[in-house]
Length: 127
Image 1 (cartoon, helix red, strand yellow):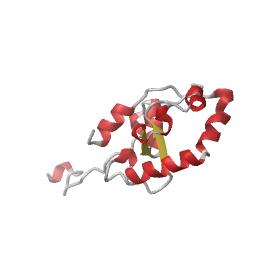
Image 2: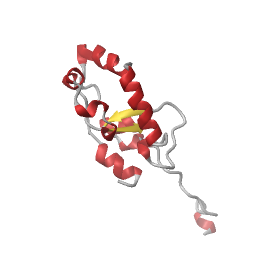
Image 3: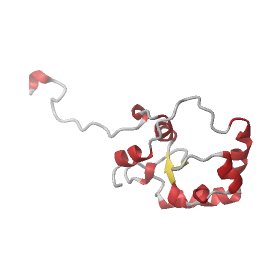
Image 4: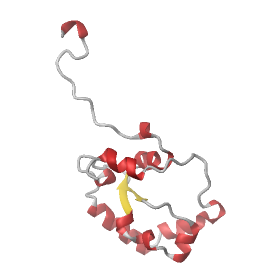
């Protein structure tokens, strides 16, 4: 998928805010995200994606970079070390607002391209 919009639409999960993911087992994903193996694959994905949101050139990330699992992970995935847990083919770089838009299906969170303005386009009486 070549465009940011196409990638977003493909990844969008349409979840619900406040839905429990790990509940009392949250410590497991915290241990995982602090592991050397995660940090190594995370760095690889950032370089592969050129530090761009959803890996799309022109959407460079200048702040914190998150790595999104294309397949939502569960407690079982961490315990069993599922293939997609550390496989770069199932990971992509993103920013927090894009990540939230993917999980909660709120396209209004996405950063959009600036509107290209032209002379007098905001003054209808001068057109």
